[in-house]
Length: 140
Length: 140
DNA sequence: TTAATTGCAAATCCTTTGCAGATTC
DNA sequence: GAATCTGCAAAGGATTTGCAATTAA
Image (cartoon, rainbow over all chains, first blue to last red; front, side, top):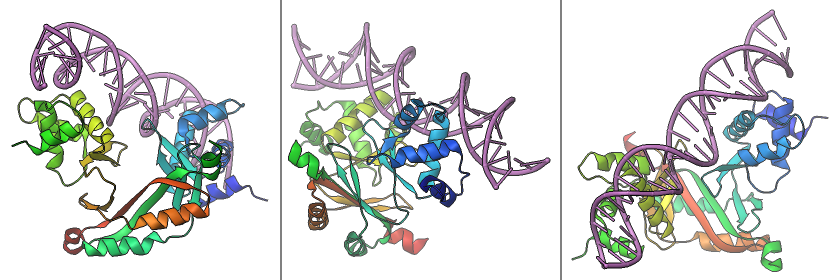
């Protein structure tokens, strides 16, 4: 049986090294986007944690392969989160940072009609919804 | 008669200094988002161009006041563009960088229904459409 | 006059890069 | 064995900040 991480690396055409597996496992373990710095710090708590450069390189490669998406963190950092390679949108909790993927794409028709009105040809679109998740809106 | 720039500064509760006016005029002159660096370089061609720090400070203040929006430029820089303080979306040309505002908000119902399905309470959303503007899709 | 603003340059801080040694296929 | 990958530390580059001089109200 092949691990999830190894499979993703194969998709990205990257060799499944111990360091990269750790990065991906770390990413997968969080339900919210993680910055390279944070991930490196976390992985460094154990032994054999990958170097910061490797974390950056791996995250970048994953994003480029479409297997991770980038988010803008508060102070100009970039945060990453694994996601399906196919197009989708996100629900993001502003309190706890949780990210839920929305597979459907109902914005598509809206996007093309709005674009057509102004002579645009749509190539892609991005739509994210920010709010409070069930837990945060009830508990807090 | 009060200039457009002075009026915006008033809205942001900033004193209408010569430097800030220059920054805003420079922003207003471009139909695409501009980075602080680019704006500073452009304004420095003339005399009395504001310092880089002032450009950064002004752009940041405008964004905070909701009078400008930030975009992520290619190499991790932040680009700014003036916009209406009220909520809206953007059509962005991937070729020439032009940005057209979409005042309507048809995503709103989509957003709240999708969010409700997962127990989320919507606080805001962001939706941008990328493509080619009329000129770029025909001419190129 | 008083508080806000500017400019400069130094300081921060995220991210990238060069390169020798280690590792995968 | 050849091509990749890693780690380290140095380099790069955007943005922020301290502080004395300047300017707006």
